[in-house]
Image (cartoon, rainbow, N blue to C red; front, side, top):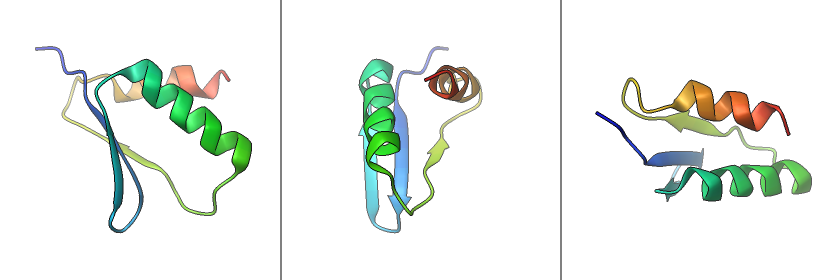
Length: 60
């Protein structure tokens, strides 16, 4: 089964769901450039690509 949805939670009540991983990567890149004092949480079902997605993001 392949999942293609990523949800980011910035603070309680502020969530952003992404269907497109490239769009999610761009959003996190923009947050990194601007800075944020809140943690970013990435979660999803097992095997949906969270670790691969984060690994790709860390290369920026």
